[in-house]
Length: 591
Image 1 (cartoon, one colour):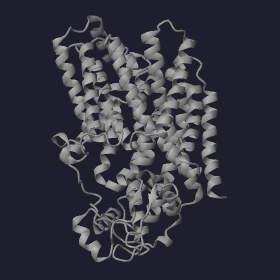
Image 2 (cartoon, one colour; image 1 turned 180 degrees about the vertical axis):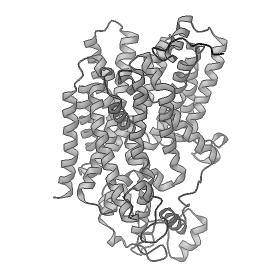
Image 3 (tube, rainbow, N blue to C red; image 1 turned 90 degrees about the vertical axis):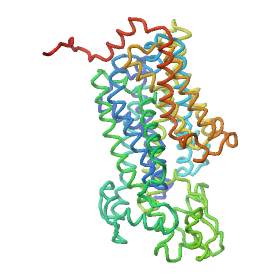
Image 4 (tube, rainbow, N blue to C red; image 1 turned 120 degrees about the horizontal axis):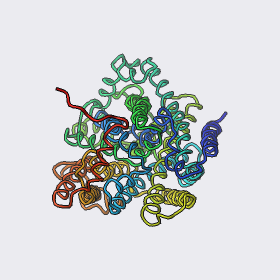
């Protein structure tokens, strides 16, 4: 059976399952549409959270980011998993006890303010819309490669599938669809990793294979990878080549950004009890760890595979000829995401770090005139991995289904967050309180359909790279919603004016800092300063500024609180009640 037919069977079969689940779990009420009727089992919810969280960025991009930078990009793993610990310990159970449907609803009620709710809605929409662009773009790339259509056509197919199961099923349909998508994506990610680990180290467990002996060289795998990279003028793989300050700030930004992402938080409103919210976070961490502990191995082994493909007899011997390049290179060249240029006319492919001044003399001596792998999109690494390792066709088809499951599951969660903010927080709670349940459900479906149309258009005309928009979403969540939620739960004194000023300060400061270096709304050529370390304020990278934005939010909120009216007494009692576990007796003194 040819590869295209296999891809069609695996991808088409998984889509039929998703749509069948949506029809079976069709939402009949606003409670089912927003919170799945608060009836989801913690283990199922943990699996759905994991699928919601592990987006195209995790499945497709993360291993590529680690592969091409090495240890420095482990901040992604530390920040994203650390964020779940924050969620489980500091937010999830308290938000579930408050008993609302959405994050803006919690902020509006806790801060007894329509303005606070509207600022939270604006933050949520900015976070979710920027995040969803990367998911839709990722789905378009995966479709274009595996179904052999152009990217825009792939994007339209992805949008249609999401439209059917998200608009029809709401949170109830999305939850059970995400359980199926998690199973698809974890199998798709793990099986190729097991095969590749066996090939390179004879160890079937990728997490252990990363620290095992490389069969061909007899050296530890990471030591062999370091050696090849240094031989070609690159930084070693296992060293830290960024400042400790930026790595720390970036990790913190990802952590508090994770804990402030509205499409993740809303999942904790779907379980029956407060204790189930904490259990859901624990199970989510287990399910996420199954993929996240494999990602460093996938990144390192893929980078080694690519380099040994180009230099089959070692870096001192002649490199691969362009005519002898393997099928996977030829296939990915057709997508435009991989490209070569024979700069010295010798018919061979030389890949090395042409920016390295130390390596320039060595390259000149060998007759090399520049790096000839002129384009290697990092996002193709996981998708191309089975082909690079010459794995069977069904594994390639499985990866296609897994990549699409990862992109679509997160896109659905984000679209639901957007829909809920419009129909519930803007229409029901702000502008039309007398709307019927049937009218609100219709408004939710219409707003989700509109969000899908907008996301599709933005995916076709992305304002920047997926990594930029995802980093922006995390920075926004860290600097706007997270501090407001934290203070809302743990401070009886934080008032509405302080919360609003804090959210606006964090939101504006982070947006302006990012746009200064990345361009206004990521439009190329509109940046005021070049994105380079010498231009950064106090050497702080835009990627890590979300942590600074969060700090500014806390400071601005505290100063404003001191200068304005105190919190009404009934709100103070409400906050104290949220923090006391349901059914707990009064505290007693011990002598």
